[in-house]
Length: 148
Image (cartoon, rainbow, N blue to C red):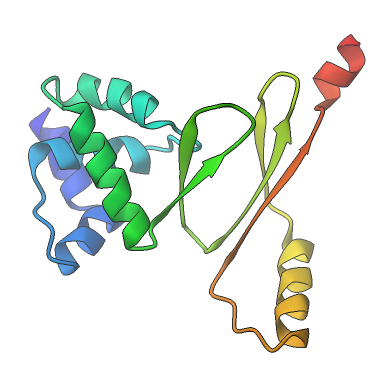
């Protein structure tokens, strides 16, 4: 457990929280470890479950507070992706794209460079200085289309 938490202490999220004046407690480090380990589109409950495997006494309130802090610092973004759960995505490059299946809830990350140039063009045309963008496209995935 200590090795895992030390790994999180050396991560980019921990450095950002430290620079912002937040304490790097073991429960908070467990949350950061889970998020930096690739858990994307995670609900607070999913982060909590995975975090308890790292730090068994982690509290759900700590998960919510940490996600709120990351959101406030612009390091994470809450979203609702086709179900009732609020989910969080880390901001790695300040643009993020999803395809969300209305039928099964599948969330597919899309890495499409052309979308970045389209959003830059729109912002520029309107005299808007963008710092990032987020796009969710809702519909039905290929698997669900073929099963109907």
